[in-house]
Amino acid sequence: MIPFLESSAVKPKAIRGMNDILPDVAGTWRYLETIVREVVESYGYREIRLPLVEYTELFRRSIGEVTDIVEKEMYTFEDRNGESLTLRPEATASMVRAGITNGLLHNQRQKLWTAGAMFRYEKPQKGRYRQFHQFDVEAMGYAGPDVDAELIIMCARMWRRLGVGRLSLEINSLGTPDTRARYREELVSYFSSVKSKLDEDSIRRLGKNPLRILDSKNPEMQQLITDAPVMLEFLDEDSSQHFAGLKTLLDAAEVPYTVNPRLVRGLDYYNLTVFEWLTDALGSQGGICSGGRYDGLVEKLGGRATPAVGWAMGIERLVGLYEVCGGEPRIGTPDVYIVAVGDAALGRGFELAESLRDALPAVQVQLNLGGGSFKSQLKRADKSGAAYAVILGEEEVARGEAGLKPLRSEEDQINVPLDNLAATIGQHF
Ligand code: ATP
Ligand code: MG
Image 1 (tube, rainbow, N blue to C red):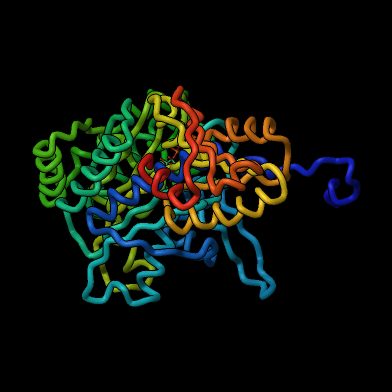
Image 2 (cartoon, helix red, strand yellow):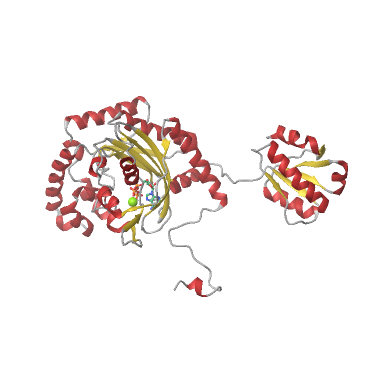
């Protein structure tokens, strides 16, 4: 039994790793999300809204059995039909599924974005949560590398618009499935030769998915990983050209990058381009935005072969970076606070508030509720952060006027006929 249902003396708890985004911070979230949306839409991406829950099988088949997500991070449950469902741990699989189920990929190309909550059973810590939020962008039907470059250049534009820095870009190419198969053999023989030094996860992966060993975050594994054979040396001609094409376009756009031949990304479906934007500003949770190409996934999930590429960005970490970089908090405050003292004034206050909202839909008008003396209402007006107080007392009402008091400057209060108030306030916003 959940304790707080038993007794009202025990306060309810939120689930570990699942956060309330409080109003003071939600303003910043919305600001960042708006800018990101504006940027991606300016590149021709259109919104798609997807369910939070999918058949478990979708994630097993797309992300891969031997991955952190599928092995230990999914929120999986049986619904009342006995079907196995999973709260989405990421958006690409759902995006591809939606493309197939809705016939969006037949002789068409799609540039799509979506955003929302993702769920992974991870160890909660700063920048790592169990419910977190992503902005996700996918281009389907494009073989690249032009679109790969554009997706990365689009990120660089976002960082400039948001005024965030301390970011670096790493790129790599995973080649074709053939390249990977040859590289895989090479890796298996290398890691087998040092098997006694491998950790438990890596030993398990050696048989099933040796590339994933390169993705290990265990510090004790890093030297072995550094000494491992390098994937880029195995690339075939076409893959090399694809990668060179990406680099040329990034160079031309003056987007700096480092080639990190050990960047493999934690999911199975990637091929060719993979990339990650990292920051040193948030401690060990440095991954802000990452993505890559997954040319085989649509076909693997039952659609017609369709090349595709995309990225996902963590909103919590973006908010963190924005704050570290000195981004202005976006706390929603009213523009105008109406102080109305007495019953007659309150009646006029309601009328006035509605007429101001009619005339100035973009101006935020807050009417004092719950009464109070002139002094206490004015105090609330000040505390609200509003730029102006509109003052309605009995005298003002009798004269058909209101006092307009600037709260954030030294200017004097003026009296304005009620009919002129909207026009006067409109001049200031
Ligand atoms: P990490 O290496 O930090 O675990 P990841 O490789 O698992 O990240 P992706 O699956 O590529 O991350 O997701 C893209 C982005 O989503 C990450 O760069 C990060 O910003 C964010 N992200 C991923 N997992 C979490 C989480 N548990 N909490 C908060 N943000 C997350
Ligand atoms: Mg992870």
